[in-house]
Length: 421
Image (cartoon, rainbow, N blue to C red; front, side, top):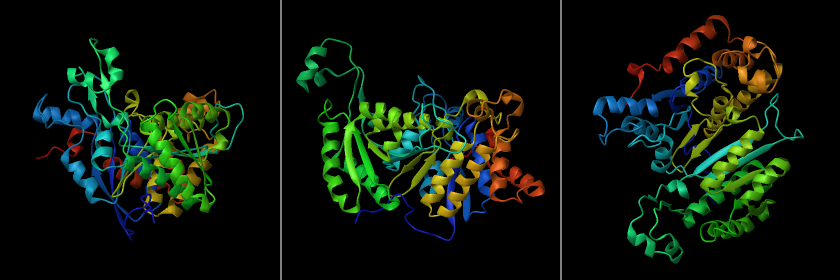
């Protein structure tokens, strides 16, 4: 029997969860999400850790530029992720062209073998779609998370002996060449495909689509296609049908008929692109949750960016972090609390009340001509969601919760944890 890694390894009466506020407006997002979660009175003890650009700057300040100890992820953070039951992470900032800089999230995916990137794209109440018809969209993307081009096996300049590895390289000999290896493993393909089918079986979904380019990229995507077709036969007994198609065709059909898709499984690069497309059909990245899941732990992160221009201004939409928190609760087996979270968010989204929705929702989905005047802050919207969960979450109770989560997400240098050796 295939192990269900989409649930926490050990059920407990009380969990320890690592939270990481990330960078820039990520702190605002996390503060809003924690405020909403306070209204649920969860059996969770929160453990703070930090990573991202903020920690890169701290490590540079401590060790000096060029020191190999400089990193976006301090060793203390790695240990806290190991020691807790799950991790909740807000947006982080990455900057191109910085010598020695390594993406924090890519490091975590590789270090903890978080081979599943699970990206739901679900149309929420009150949030429109750019499509001509307002379809009911509910797609879950299973993106392989550790291999493909993201394995980071790259060469520049290309060593001369590499031109002899394949006859196709002969035409590039004598030219300035950069090469990235597209690495697929049999077990890597098999486990992401099985995870998609196991999720279908557990949730009653009836179709799984494998999106690939096996017609052109015959060895890597060909391996994934062959394994998918073999595994799909095993799940026919559960009434689940497997379909495989070219990824570029999927990109087209997602626009034309998104309702035809339930679960999509894809390689790292294609999954990255298709999941972003699916998110745009359901409101954009401001509503897009994400989970990085492996055999031993899971890290749940918002798909939205850290929006540095709005850092610490409380302007960003908290919806993505709220839905990401729902995914984390479901992972921990707290499904009822997760359902309450999504229901409360939906109720706030459809009310269109001035002072309860952030500027982007009022402007882009409700057509409010006075969106600047009527816009709520991140915390105002979070408080409105919290009140839907617990009507008593007002006055002194709300003020106390705001003070608590503000302290939990303090972003001054003295509050950042890590590189304290």
